[in-house]
Length: 195
Image 1 (cartoon, rainbow, N blue to C red):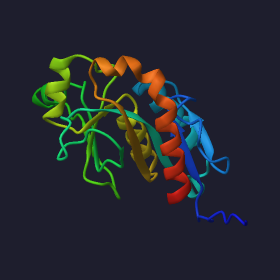
Image 2 (tube, rainbow, N blue to C red; image 1 turned 90 degrees about the vertical axis):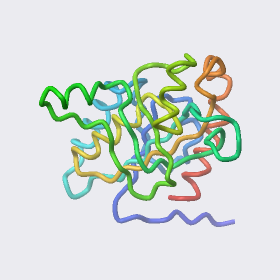
Image 3 (cartoon, rainbow, N blue to C red; image 1 turned 180 degrees about the horizontal axis):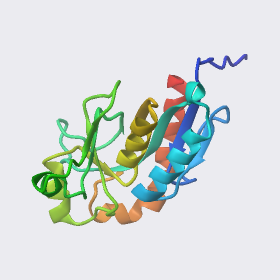
């Protein structure tokens, strides 16, 4: 059997917070493992993009796990793979900063998404009160997506976020290590099909 590798005018850089989430990325992709959290993600992505000449910067595809914020009924994000259309920085006091006269970007729209909203913050969400608050604004929660998207926007690079639900941002989040490989397999398969 012959495998055809699709050629693209620009390369794809797959970005993941952890090696475990990138464990099943097809070998033809360049992979950047950033570390967990917004600061590490922003620094790593910006450094990687700055190393490419302006005209040859890759499309960034950020893969990873996410917690589902909505209930378990069919109308809500509770399982599966999502390509968010919007990402928000949930632990930035943007409204307060704007009131004080300082512009604060806390939302980024993304092309080619499925309509879902991802909330990003440096807090590992397992608290029911925080989960309930976030569920009014977003479908999913992670710890790097906004930072990756913000770095890409600053560098003028196309970005896609691809997230697989590994938990429900509750006490099940503490079982993340046992769930990550199943999510990584699905994310790797998505990359193989879409790029």
